[in-house]
Image (tube, rainbow, N blue to C red):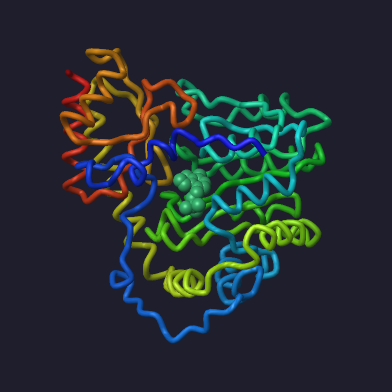
Length: 366
Ligand SMILES: Cc1ncc(COP(=O)(O)O)c(C=O)c1O
């Protein structure tokens, strides 16, 4: 493995220092929760090595979301990031080929690179509404292709595949004898309702998700992968055991409590994110220096500058942080020109979001 730190992590607000940022529009989750916000206290848990796959209760709660999927098809991991790492390192070897839709969550590109894989990148285009070009994906597949990798709802654009597009990708992978990885970390934040859990489309499809984004609990580091091929699950379990044996009893306890209350917790969160997206849409409608593709899921969007700001894009980002105290995710976090930036509308308070949007408008004008 040839590890390289990713700009999205080096420049992340937690590395830069939250206290130095006034209007933080760079996050990709809803606001972080305290235990008391969730009404949680810890019982007298035994701090044992827990079930290697993750607690049965937690896996049942996760599996309940997928048609035809059971608790044995679920492996609890150290965040979705941990699941993506396990999948890449278990399935891919140096020289293997995979097809990755870009932009993407950085790990989906960087871990295969660290392994030494050959990657065909299918770039999403603003002009095409960031829709996946299925013909381009098909054309990129070679006899050595092991994996097709997509994120849905997409980070950083918030655009979603249709159910037909997701099915077409699953069919394509099946026809070519490769696997389809769908990073569904934002699935619970789908404004027109979620697509079927991808893993329910066949044993060659792997779903990845976590509690980090929709529930605001990234600090418990609970994610998972779902797949109905028992041999593959054993392989993934072997990787998890070699990395860390099992998960944390405390983290899994919190995750069980959160997921058990999913039906109460989620609707107000989704309603609030819809309202915030409307707020961003109103601002965008009056901001002629930006254009966008309106998202249908997630908590981020990916606007593009319509013209060079005074001092160029560097001038914009410098003014935004140094003069306005606002932070967004520049395009290079996603290997895209900095004329684009990721704007997270779910993490700040509404007032902070409004101030952040004003700060962006001001910084665009110099
Ligand atoms: C698409 C996507 N996948 C995975 C992750 C990793 O999240 P976590 O490891 O906190 O579940 C992120 C975080 O930004 C993401 O945006």
